[in-house]
Length: 568
Image (cartoon, rainbow, N blue to C red; front, side, top):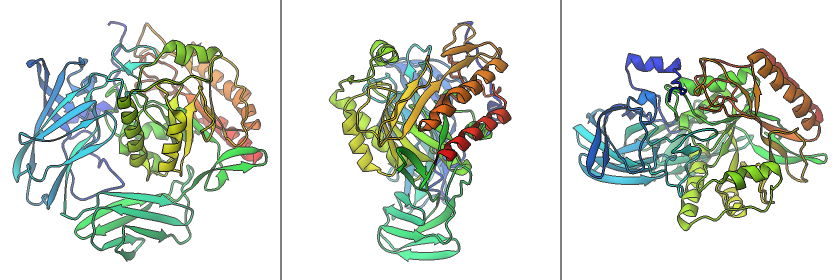
């Protein structure tokens, strides 16, 4: 299609110089010296009905639908993607056990090492791993992945579609996060769970039954149980303005892990006649942006991790302190950068099931915002619950993650009260927005509304913080930086950067500031960047143009915080 433009980014220039893409350690809170990154060029075939349709190379971890993968074609629902590469294990690397890790592979994956089947995985967003000790060998080895992506609606799939357009985006298939190997002792730590308060951290260890030693700030603490309470002298609390991270090492026999934590609490508290979200016991205004995590180079990933960093740091310069990660789970690196640079995260669960524009969008936009829910098959229920629990487990240790959205605008929504209870029990330390936008239930920590096409007028609900979980969506299309030169999607069209910036500032001055007076404690503007046809981002899709003056936006942000702080 001639009206579709392939937008290059500055990040992909690094790929031209060779090296291993996304070779930064993929699990920053479970770091070992043992690390072999398998990203890079793999042999790649497409097979359908026992016939090979394509044979060539692909650059992992980028999806085959992305230009920088080197394949740059759509994957048919009947296609089998076959990835294969060689890797070498030497004596210096090998310990007792060898673990093969995948950050994510969409939607079905079967894995073979040296021709032997080692395991399979279902679902496109969660990490998975296999112990390949019994089939791996010293010297040369091969790994083979056979993946399928029929875009099964019983599995979480986010905003992927077979026919992209508007608010639905390019389908992404196969391996899309780092593939890596580590070697560990026979007794090793499988996971750690870190629960913090304002004075210290409770560290729970899974795996490794031998005596353990925790090293922190020059001191060593020995313990033999599965958990240890670490008290911190003169604690320095984690906040967006001061995102202090405490580093520690955990030794379990011959296993040694480096990790970190941030001291902070999240709570909902009453101040006068209002309920507010509190960070470390103090009311905080969560001033944020919708972040869908799409990039013009790698689609589901930026060409390099710097793309994640720049999104966070540019929005910090504009005064934002929060990103709502929308219907997507990112690589662990993204959340590490949010921890490190001080960016709060509102994390969405990932929808499954069929979407109805009429029921899920048109009617609630006009008037019907209650009493609607969908049915889910047994399989969809099981897979959605597994995915939600996996997200909570994956993100539990990150201080930046403070809030979960279970269902968004009714998409695939079912049994919301039940899921609120289950997830809140699993992790009671975060805020839960059960039904973001509409089709509300009483079992939710917040009163959550989306407002487009009309003035922001919110109704307070006793006992629940008021959250404007989506608004704005103003469009400014930049010539030379737009994915679709023909079609445009958004909610209010502005014909210049100046008009866009003025309209955005006016929206905050005329409506958000007054909503804070009425009790608003969080607001999520749509959105951080353009995504394909959507040109309602503060950044263009290629991340080359920031459509607002950062200083002016930062000044506006300070006014929001000051107005909020004056209320409490």
